[in-house]
Image (tube, rainbow, N blue to C red; front, side):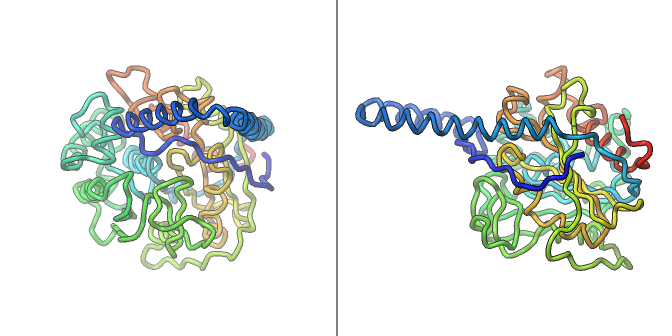
Length: 405
């Protein structure tokens, strides 16, 4: 397994996010206008061509570097982690993934942090087809009410009765962190409101739900780092300086149960950030996983018994898009260092490797990985991404001697 010693950065994607149908049309219109304008500026053609060549060369260099790093990645090793102390969190599509993963595997998880994300099976509960349309409209920027939690909870109970997911009664003992920013133009607050409603319907006690809202926050994972972008931003890398370390808040809430003493985070991460080969968890290449994932192992977790926290990146936020910023600079590792938590950062593929129907490299919360588009199964135990991530967790829980392929 390769230890990461340097950052990989890539210029932000020119695509806007979210890409609703109206936004796509507007983007196309603007692009066509720009092309016409450039055609009229004949004197600029040479300079534009030169800049394009340089740009393509830089992108190719980053891609080759990423591919070289992928090729060197070793298998994920077992760490003897504590299966009973597993949790998840995520932003945007990663938040939708965190919610559906938490519900589907509720018997194995203790909680979830959901930042700007909707309820379990939101796309299915929306009553809009295809589900891909529901995902980028009703589940993100609904014109009317957001998809109702009552419908999603009813569906979840039916899925549990069929054995597709765990019994929703397991959710009653969990601790849930939710967040929405009033300046978030990507996922509206009324969508996150329904996520809170879902967990309450599932029996999570009000004192076990921490739902926070900030009037000045955009669509992002929040930090207390001046080098990050403005708090009200809604653009890549979706890591905003709002004066709080949101990752710390999430981990404190999930693991800081009554009677549990947590330690202050370390000033600087001192453990190992390791690259690992994800392909063994997706041998059929159905999950649209990148070849390389990342795991942070504190020094104290070289011995067995650590908790595991899985962090799902958002769209346009994987390593191939933003370099190592999400994996290294969001505060999870510093808190994990002093509280014996292994942090797993699975990665969705870059566009050249992923599904053509997933150009923004999002986690699947509408069905693009499903074999049968008319009967999507993205929310079930058997779904490619769900199963792959659970296998990664199980690998971390394995004893080191049992961690080989």
